[in-house]
Image 1 (tube, rainbow, N blue to C red):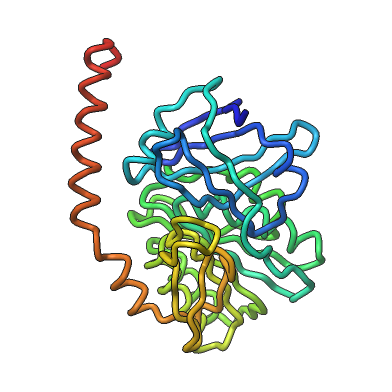
Image 2 (image 1 turned 90 degrees about the vertical axis):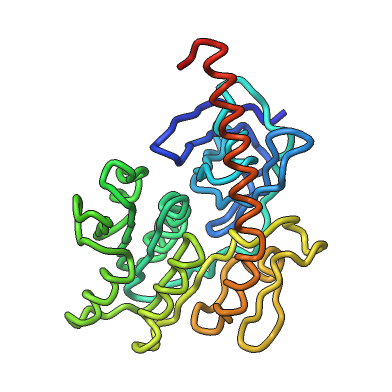
Length: 284
């Protein structure tokens, strides 16, 4: 039912265009879907990067990080996903803010695109900032340029744009007196925390998307529990976007690191099995 109609790999990020007409006709900026490669796969929350109501397709960018995302990375055009559920989550609040800064890293580069597009259509000045370790790891650039007044880059090795990360670009802009009226960030939790700390001294309203801490996606399991402003919230049903200045980042980081070692061991074991299979098929 959910046929993979287009696939491309940008380093360890995989573009997946999936046939899902009902979702394509109802999705809004900031919302996500839950996908499963097969019936035994982990439930993975992914921000929808783009959609086409004419073709009934949605575009996702999946970061290859664990076993379930590795399974998705091995899928080929013509294969079908077992589950694509959505749209889920509360859409981004889009209105005329003034100047909007959006920051994306890893899968978040694709994730910020629909928000940037919606903010531009609402009459805002849009500044998109994207980060990667190396310049060849950027993607979705043409689309971001089309909906942004300015696209800024940050790379760990300095090969494109500023040497550093999104928060370094943000700080430099603010120190130069650039006025930002609203900020949106999508990426790993470490990036979200750093960016929130960069905007905090300037009291810039800051939204962070906490998709990465979800599991069930429907509010049933409680795995995405997070403290925001002293209140318990669930990222899947109360979010995915929250005030980055009110998130209890220390608590969140403790919970996320609980099974890091086990996840790493399992992923490495599965990766070796995949390599062995490829050698047997003569693909390596």
